[in-house]
Amino acid sequence: MQVVENILYSGSADTVVQSHNINTGELVRSYTGHTMSVSGLQALGGVLITSSLDRIIRCFDIKTGDLLQLYGGNTDMIFSLSVIGNMIYTGCRDGRVSGIKLDLRKYHCCKWGDCSLKFGLLDHLIQHVQDHINQTVDFKSCFWDECVHKFPRGKQLDVIQAATEHILSHVPNTKE
Image (cartoon, rainbow, N blue to C red; front, top):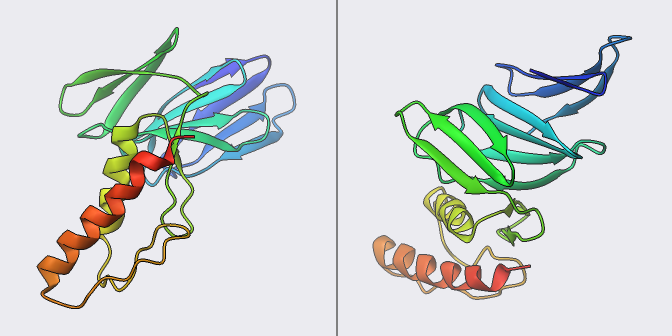
């Protein structure tokens, strides 16, 4: 929980972060996207940075509620979050503490199907794309936006390997 300029920000087990006016109790905005309990948050300038047991850090525009970008890379559930200067520090269930540089000016965009999530670090996008690949059952064609590449039929493992190599070849071109 945090209070900034008469607005109370709180996260909960229902995966939602809410902001309320502390004078009126009125709900100002909800911030959604986490898939597990919210474990930490910090409002800083016009940005709300949240963490969750889902191992993801999300950065929201406080006024609009828009998701600005994500940071992944944690190997276990995030139990705590603190932002100091331009660094986001997290403490995880496995006892690890890690720091990630916060830079909202640079991001790497996923263009898998209708996914348009923006990641602060290229490694986190690659991990995210690998998750898309691992969740895909049948590769007939590339799922990357505007790619028409078709995969040949063959042994499932060979098709998955070819699809993985092809799809990851798109990733370095996503810097925006």
